[in-house]
Image (cartoon, rainbow, N blue to C red):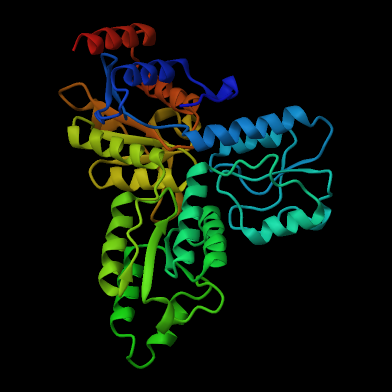
Length: 410
């Protein structure tokens, strides 16, 4: 796979050593067991796959290339380039401005953008409507377009479905940039509808099964208001369907939705899974670590508005106490941790969150992982913070060397 030019301050020599060794011994990515590092007073499990994916690295390389190639020019990002605060803040510190927030609300009026300004399209892509507006201004949308190839693959699938007269059902978060972009492309291809979760899919399937009942069309219109393509007709456009998804959703839920709606429709397109490889690998690696057992708690690092990271948290908290943090600064002195509750969508604090680990009669184990938009450097700083909390005396390089030797001899 191609390598990218990523700024050094996003890299981690510790994490790179682990990833490179695992890749060397498992080139086909068949082993989803975690890496176990024994620091004496605490053991750290690192999930087999985590951190920057192909699409994120591609977006970062293009964005910093835009800055380097255009000194003195105004540079705008259409919205957050990826859902990670450290990366976006670093771009802002270099003079990059945002046109919209993650919900599509205007931050910099589009009327201020001029034809010779640089506009970077984020990894999530953008809608055809926004692309048309930028083209009308005279902005070159293609030069610094960082849209993830796996997102574009979903769009191509949607176009194929539309050409074959299937309605595109998109499993995704309705207000997420990627889902909004996919909905735009799918609507251009034909009929399209966004379903946010299994609960909505169940409701939709029930409506489809009772399409002749009184008020069904009204209920449908109210439930999916703003999430259907122009001219969508309930009685016509749910006969033949195909399911695609926002690339960062939970794979098992997308499959459940597809299986459910297949039974409710007359015709169903056999679409292949449209999750990106990194989302799939990260979710499998998380499940692999949890299935292996041994971890007493989990720390997940990443942006709070990151969909793929939130789903990793969702998977972990079903089995272990889980704490979702942006970076090491959320871990305060005295054992307090400021973390994000994905259900309340709120920042909360927990005191002495690791206190029970010190009471164990054995060496405690912490599973550490991150989302696909989180720099390895962030994870490394969290690792050091954990080691400092346990006052570990073992040298990190020695632990890594011993781990690599033992792994290679297995």
